[in-house]
Image (cartoon, rainbow over all chains, first blue to last red; front, side, top):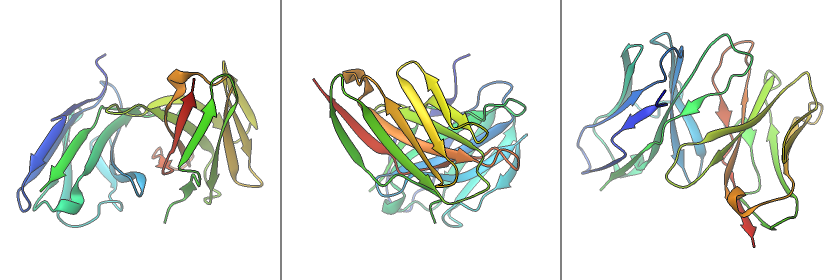
Length: 115
Length: 113
């Protein structure tokens, strides 16, 4: 398996523009997580899905952020409009229910810069 | 409000010596704890974990200790190697309720040759 795949790896956009981050989880995994990494707060959970259904979006900072999972193999995180304070590395991760180990596998991340 | 805290942002240790990373948590529902390692420009990778029914788990050079009464866990790396230089994240979950992981802010470890 190729692991969790995120695209793009890097994104530079102007303030006010829409940004869409993409994620392909590991096949067979039931959970998908979106995290944001910043220097100040480390890894923050934004939202997670179970079997494509959003379970907890309490970490989504504002209404400008939205996430979807239309099927088991694809998820998007959208920021509209983007702001400079959204600049961070965004990680997608997936895990499989039913195992003792609740280990999550992470993608390589998308580094977002909003100028 | 962060439920998992790593109060030391950085740690420098000489090659061959022990690295000790600390982590505290506040949520008494947490019953599973993990350590992740992250190199620059890569995603975090799983390192070692421990269930709340244990107080120690060892995997090669890595040992995690859990003190439930103190809501504290630590990661020991012995001996430390240059390749261990990375950011280490402590994470926890209340797996009996859900599978989401709450992470600490991370500790940057630098192993000096």
